[in-house]
Length: 111
Length: 119
Image (cartoon, rainbow over all chains, first blue to last red; front, side, top):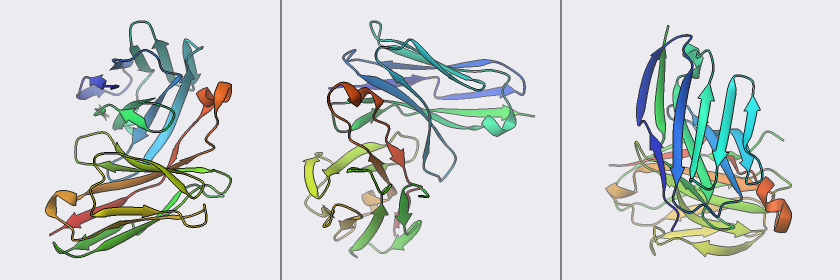
């Protein structure tokens, strides 16, 4: 059974800092990994999807890396802004059907 | 297409009442998923449909829960005899459901969710 863990659970940084969010998973036989953003009381917005054959994906100030062999992914946010404040979730397919999510990292970027 | 739509956004009900939620997926997506999310946790899988067929249900889906997707388009999730422990955000997602070599590109698109409060 796939288990996903995210560290830290919460993070507070001043505006402008670069930061790294961590995700680990127990079963390395995944075919992709997704990072999502969730604002309070809202649904999930997909940020980045990394296929198993890829090492990283970039979108604007976001960069996600994937190391399947060690069961880890990181989400790097450059030059953080108050608008980046949200919960960030990583998820991997449990099989061909559902996704397993971590509990998320709650990020606060202070002006 | 405006994405995955869920209705209602919020539902407050008394314990013991029945509630029904609706999800409209992205029109060309053949897969539809239901998840439940409690405070401070990530979403947990409940069930999924491939077109109109319900192919998998998790152990979280007790016999008080039933989901349908009668024409392979929208889906409903009904909870009978609600309990306080049912209070959560119920999320719907849809995907193209690519298989084989293309499955790595499967992206699930999520709706805004229905927040259920059972008093």
